[in-house]
Length: 238
Image (cartoon, rainbow, N blue to C red; front, side, top):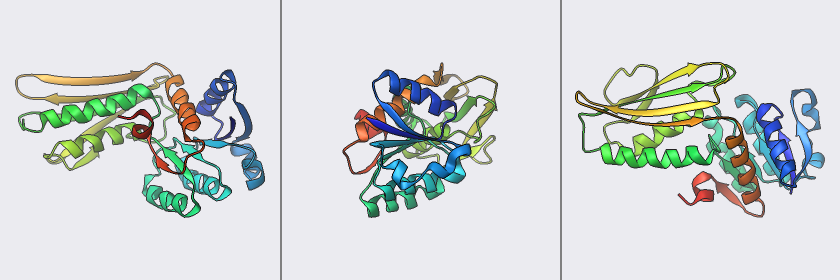
């Protein structure tokens, strides 16, 4: 499989190493210093593009892939106000788009576990819920895209909650998300339900970027030859 890497930071470099080890070929690497190399001609060398960049460039990057006829896997977060527009461009161009806020297999199992727990907790209003996410100091967005995905999953199952809010909640219908930035922490997320008599807490801790990179590479392998818009639940069947 021939891969274009749009974004060649730490995540892009990790994906590259895993891809080469798996026998794939990276035919294009785009970063800030060679952004002009992202041309239709160069992109068409690839069977699939993997995009990990910045919120302000993600929409333009994935749209360019659709128009070039190249499937794209995107893991950039904090740009989802344009997600539905990206879906429309993908559908109009007959493209293939795979998006996830987190490509770790373990995290996506954690998402499903959290939704199931929220459904179980729904009949018990004596339990409040809060969330915490911890990432490295270079993480640009807070709360993380993963934390937002977790919160939205809980809201779908927990009828007494209808919104998430960074830090403290100002009313009972809001889930507070507490964000911390600590050097060299790949990512930790926890969901806690608590009452006057006990607490229930579930936690996912990433040990390195490799889990995210490996999941993104697997998504790229899975996406080639498909048309439409997909996510981790489609690939994992959960």
